[in-house]
Length: 374
Image (cartoon, rainbow, N blue to C red; front, side, top):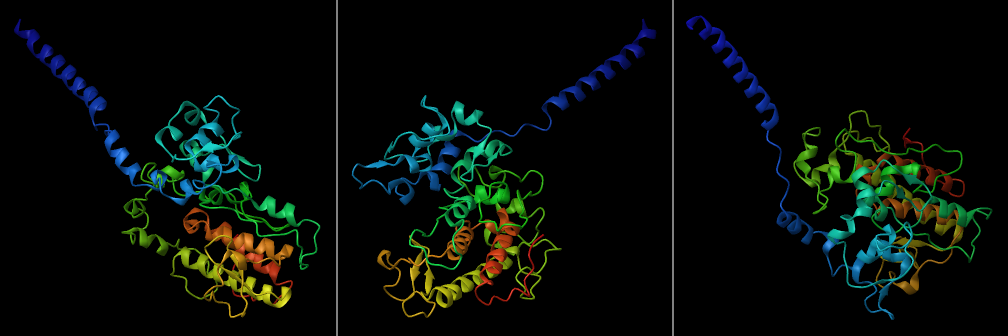
């Protein structure tokens, strides 16, 4: 019997070791536990999507009738988005009725069979995107309501520098990050004929979709995640200092150490100066911009500053030429995506550079020091 002991022990230890290995493969490392419903709810409660007093959700409360119009309900009402999805049994990809007031972006807006099965986002330009994966519903509302196509349609065949009473400011609308991310693929900016523009801006692997960077419930960004590639980042404020080593000096100020945000914002300021010069010198009606609807106002004393009483609805700008419509659309587009420097900075700089280049046909604009992104 003894002669069988060692072979049996060897087999026993072999099988035991194999079992440990197999068990280890199954249970190690342990799967991360999902967040509790309570934790998710706490995050959502503090987010903008749950703010029942926000203008985005109460704007229509005093109207008669008090309802969210069909053309607004998709993104400003839980009922409207469910209507858009067809979750209420109606035709999908359209909101066919006004929605009742009093709702926010609740859990069921994103967590329902139609939202889970959705694969395509539809943009105002008529373009579609099918690579958004888990962020496809985000992009349906964070895309604006207008595109460069609307600007082109409104100004086609008109004399560039002739005031036309049928023209007015075209507002891309608000929080347009989903469209900016895809750039020329969805024609969110007004793109000048004969120019090439950047489409989707690819980030690094694992940080491609909206919810890869933004917590889907709190909407917040965890700055420490960025630090893996950008060691200088310790809080959200540091994001504006991020710059890839080979980034050209787009704004021509000689500073090649500032973040891409600095490049973008300087070009944005230059575009504003050019718009003001064009309005004053070509149209003869100085113009002001303010982050308040309807955004563009007359500057009666021509000092370029918003003085007391000038920013009011009755003083809105009304002397529109096709060239000014295009320029103000692109300027406002950049203003409406505060994270544009992360979402697709080069596309936005391209659009602004070309806008100033177009304005230079009517006024003096010095673009010599600027670099247009390739």
